[in-house]
Length: 193
Image (spheres, rainbow, N blue to C red):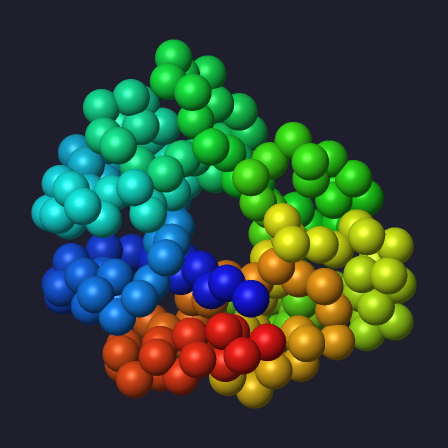
């Protein structure tokens, strides 16, 4: 099982160093999500990251930067539902229902959320009962391209072994009180599943 880290929506003072620490400790993919950012501050953060890590970054905003920088790809969501750039791009997408998973083959990976009660978004509670996720796994709707999102921490990550998720995306458990040891613990759990 793979682990993806999503950035906080706000910019942080130590963010570049924290992102570098994640990459240096084995992070395979970072989703750069800053919904209220302007292009200049978004680009400044991207350019502060060594170029050797850019191919592990997915942009949630300012897709035009994907034309200039060798990022992994772009992530489609409600704010940015399509990519119309010139560069052939890997594309991921957010899904909030099992029906949306029927188009998973069109994407490199998708997020299904919320699986558990969110850590970072108060009131954003689990939307799928255990039996529904189990049936979706059995039917192949949940597969290696589908990543669980929402409330992922060391306890809930272990519960994903009951399903066929290809991985999990984590936000709150990493950024609430940034601790590289927590990331390493989550990475070890994900790799053991």
